[in-house]
Image (cartoon, rainbow, N blue to C red; front, top):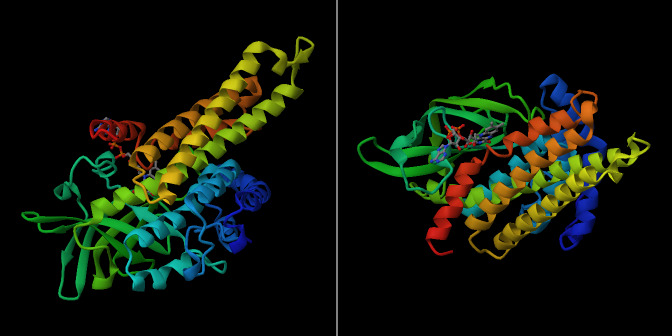
Length: 391
Ligand SMILES: Cc1cc2nc3c(=O)[nH]c(=O)nc-3n(C[C@H](O)[C@H](O)[C@H](O)COP(=O)(O)OP(=O)(O)OC[C@H]3O[C@@H](n4cnc5c(N)ncnc54)[C@H](O)[C@@H]3O)c2cc1C
């Protein structure tokens, strides 16, 4: 269990997360990859250790750890299994949204549930729609008319209609933060965020979307069919959804980048151990320069990605804008995960291509790190925009 006194001690936190990743996530992730069934007991077990939403402050009964320490935890979870890490991490992302924009009442109502060590709540962030993906993830400009999901004002609150697609924990989450357009078609007021509890009438889970990787994570569809929400389900002022989303994405991108570093590290460590034990031409393959050079490159990329993640996390901890640093960390860490897992597979030769080894799963898992929370092109656009602003 994460303790409050661990907050300043990243090593102790890392140890707890690593042990859990090794003992629970490795097996759970491999089983999920084979069956396509999300390992909810492992997700719950993470919560019981305080790993679900460790960013929840102590005043709401959470461990209240800094973003730099959350990154350390996420790297270990990603090392265990990238998909299950994404599922677990969603609670932190929802907690971040509440910490950024929630009222005191909303924080009191939800934060302690997200970080609870008994039946912790699972979270979801629902932005993507069938017709809108990348444009929701980048601050080009406020384009509320493009969002098909709309929230119409009623005397009691809001009526939501629309659909969301590709949502991690979509339909399974206890609490979903969902983006919808407010105002009318003619006079859009902007994007707004809503807090929706599981079981709310009019919130319907669609199908689980079959994916090529990340099978330790539940990816689903959500439908809003005249979903009536009270006034106090609005997160932040009406029309402020875009800015809040952009702030939340800084946190989410840093966390996912960190999990991607963990995935890359798992692949590197396995490949290094294999290259020491596998002999060809009478000597371990590590002694062949091309193999050693490939491993050196993998190690360098992982170290560089981790440094970028830590820089973004430090920006978050200092209350600085992390738009640029989070985009750079996400882009580089996801590229590193893809390259490193492929290199690790290659170092295993024919064995790497078999399902007897985890490499092929890691390659499949890594690919999505370049897609969700903004594709690589979106991160590049984000970086270019910051450049143009002179940041
Ligand atoms: C497993 C998984 C889990 C996910 N989890 C979540 C979640 O929890 N919540 C959520 O809201 N969403 C989630 N997503 C959705 C994800 O964020 C989107 O798929 C992603 O943002 C891309 O959107 P899209 O699929 O609509 O692709 P599109 O936006 O249609 O993009 C298609 C291609 O065009 C490129 N492209 C688009 N616009 C531009 C541009 N302006 N310049 C250059 N290139 C461009 C893209 O980079 C991409 O290569 C998840 C997706 C997956 C696969």
